[in-house]
Structure formats: structure tokens, C-alpha cells
Amino acid sequence: MDQRQLLHDIIKKYKSDPASVYNSWFIGSEERLKAFRAIKRGVLQVIEDIKNEKFGNDFKGSSLEFVLSAITEQKEVFEGAAHPFYWKPKMRIPDIYENQTNKKAFGQFLENCFYASKEDQLIREIIKLDELKIKGLGPAVASILYFLHPTILPPFNTAIVNGFNYLFRDNKKLGSWQEYLKMREVILKTNTDNKDQLSNDLGAIAGLFFEIGVKNIIIEGQVISEEDKAKLLKQYNRRHKEVLSEKHEEDLHTEMQYHLLKIGKALGYDPIAASNDRGKCYGEINFSFISLTAFPHLAVDKETLNTIQLIDVIWFERNGNKAACAFEVEKSTSIYSGILRLSDLAISFADHNISLFIIIPNNREKDVVLQLSRPSIRNSNVKIKYILFSDLRENCDALCKFGESHKILEKIAKSA
Image (tube, rainbow, N blue to C red; front, side):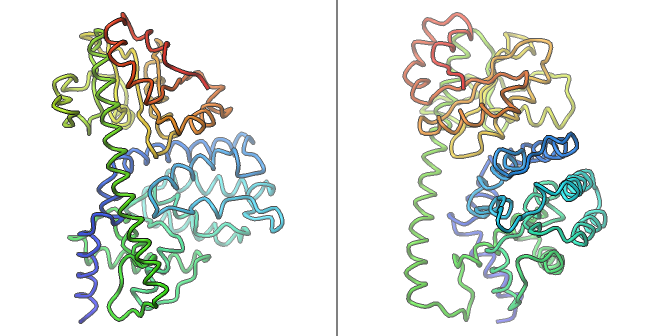
């Protein structure tokens, strides 16, 4: 079998597996698209913190940790993306925390990449960064760059490199920018040759290499030991359990959106679900019957509007375009990205108060308290409270019956 036919068969297998990264993350996760805006906002915060000398001497608690948290929660393909950025004091790497010159160079690199619009600009910035030889700052940064320029720069981690090497019988090294750039050339050509099966977004082909790298896809002729077979069986069972778990989470997410739409309608507001959720239903109730069908006109730029329209539920004043409440329902995804979307809405309506809420599973209460307690959020003008799934579910009918305005939510809402 020639290489082209082999690759065609591998891609077909990759796309047909319901538990693959392609189906569970690339096309199967609504949160993936939502994360791009949050991560971009986070990168801008890192840049501002470095400029204003507010970026500390440790990864923990920094704005960079926010960015990597949002990335690592993008399914298993980005698992471990934060590890290269943990401050390792004995080795003093990555050397962007204590060394002020390196810190500033890193901030300038991120800013230049953020605002770059062409491939050659990005490659030039990568080469410039590589020439600085900052200890411990290798192509792990590419996982950040992917979310800034998904059609130009692929993510880069151990599993992706392993998959690339397995497929192309190569020996690319993990910690080298030069190796990354060489590998990128092959990835772009392969993606172009198979674009009808993959995507302009390099996340699709990166997911393919990931699946090969962790041996979820076995290449013809690849020898598998009995020990590896046992591991693969265990891995297969775990992945399919995760698919079922994600389905359960999505069902809970839909249920919470339904309760919020129902309560908003009962209290006299015009509620609306996220633009990609209005076709959903809960039980026998279609969201279209209890939600506005079109988003009210808002005087904001297109990018901000696109972000606001992805907020899970917003209550507007009746027959108007003034938002009274906004809600983000979080599952196992990044709480931080939900906070940023609510912040965008609040900033857009700075002339009046909007009540903002994160709706969370009971077992994530500690997570949301931690995020809302961070200085950058606690000290802002945007105040966000949270409501537990169980409290919303158990009190839904009572809120509908006895509530007169959104202030009734204070009965079940909590502050960090």
C-alpha cells in the first residue's frame, strides 16, 4: 500500500471513531470554539501584565496560568500543555519569571504574534525567540500560538510529535523550535494534500497525530507488544466511558439552560439561549418556544457580539435590548472562559447593572470560588455570583411562582 492510500485509510478511521479527538473535540465540542476568544483575551492579559510589571516570578497564580488552564481543558489532546511552564526553581526554567529581560522578550513575542496577520511574520518571530535561547522556553508555546492562528501554526506536544514520527518514520525532537518548523512544513503539505478530508484548521490534523502518538490508531506494520495491547484495551474502555460521561454532561447543560429560560420567561423577561443552542430541546419542550428567535440589536463590534451570542442564556427586558441577567453553565470546561464572556457582556452594558451568574455542578464549587477569588477578577468592576445545579433544579418551580424580578435569584446565588 502506498503512503497516500495508507494516510487516506488512517484519516477515515480517525473520523469514523466516535471517541476520537476529531469527533469528541474538533467537531464535537461547542466549547472548543468558545475557548478561542477566552484564550485570546487571556494572552492579551499576559502581555499587559508583563508591560505593567505585574507578571510575577511564578507560574502559579499568574495570567499565564489562566491561559494554559483554558488550553489544557480542551480535551486530552492538550493534556499536559501547562507542564513546560511550571516554574522549576532548581533548574530555573522556564527562565521568564525571574529574568526581567527574558520576561519582557516573551511578552513582546506574544504581542507580535497576537497582532501578526501573515505566515512569514509569525515564522520570523519564532526564529527571533529561538535565537534568544531562553532556557526552558521551547515550542510548547506553539500550543498557545495555535489558538491565535489555528490555520497557520499547529499545536505541539509529546503525543503529537510521537504520532508524526510514527507516521512519517521520522525522528523529530520535542524541545527544538527548528524541529517544530521543519515538522510544520510537512504538516502543512500533508494537510493541503488531504484538505477535503481534514480542515483548514490545523487542529484536525494535530488530533490525528495525537491519536497515532497515543496508539489509539495503529499504523499498518506497527508491532504491538502484549503489554501495549493490554494498555490499549484499558485506554479504549476509558475513552468510551468519557464519551458517555460527556453525553451526560451535555444533557445536564441542556437541562440547566431549560430551567434558566423557563424562569426568565415566568419572571417577564425575554430570555434567549446561545446562538448555537436554540435548536435544542429538554423533554418535549423546544428551546425555540421559550426563547427569543433572534438576538436583540447591540451597539458593539462584531467580534464582541459573536462572543456575547455564545453566552448560554441572557434575560433581556421585555421588548428591548437591555440585558438584565446573563448566565454561563459550566461543566468540565474552563470556568475562566465563561467568566470572560460574561465580562464582555458587562463591559458592553457599562451604563447599567447586569446580574451575572455562573451555573456549576456541585462538585465544582471549589473551582469557581478559586477563579472568582483571583485578584484580577475580584478587583474588577464585574461582579459575578454562582448558582449550584442542585439549587437551580430544586427551586425552579418556586422561583417561577413566587419571583417578581431577577432579584429572586439572590435567594439561591452565592458569592466567592
